[in-house]
Length: 255
Image 1 (cartoon, helix red, strand yellow):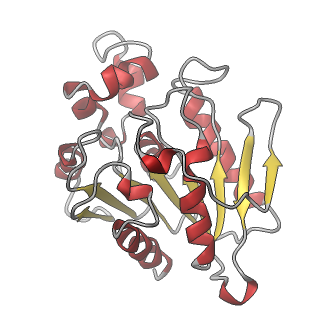
Image 2 (cartoon, helix red, strand yellow; image 1 turned 120 degrees about the vertical axis):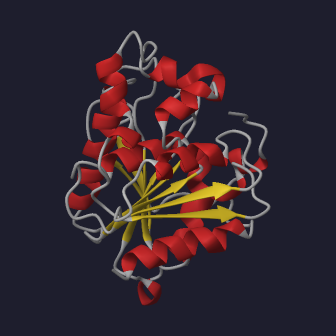
């Protein structure tokens, strides 16, 4: 994953508050509030990407968070431990994100109607949470350029074999962990909308296609392709892809 994309360093207005949820430096989430007259009564929980690696944190999602708040959502951008950090890797990263989601649900100043939006590796994490009833009562999840199928990601050597680093070994070395971590191996139990960028060469559309092909016909899954968008355009509120992302979030709130 490159840090050369402009969205990765663009500034945005600071969050309205930051909540500490535990003793680790990653036990935090930032909150952006909508204008009261525009509030939709829905919290969007953002889960950042970065191939689960330490050098990528939640800061680069601030422009997206600001835009979603401007469009009427309460927004909580969660942090989590990544590969090589205390509590990071599998299963610590996934368990930490689940705990952060529950912390946002327990926040008395956030609506309890939750939509999870994850980008890249964050897309993997929200799709994992949408499987096997891991988080009850979700309105749904949106994966943006998600690492939805770990086996396919491994075949493509995405992120210089980031999946193997996250799981501390190959599928042959650690078959149980790979099976437990891969959303493609679990039934989808909450609605999910997966958005790929037409020009994405970081997590190509083939990864979502592999996931979708393994779903039964009645799975609560929709897929869409953002035309003319690359991996980072999917989190850029100034790119036309934002309107598609916004529409997918809104669709989940209508069910």
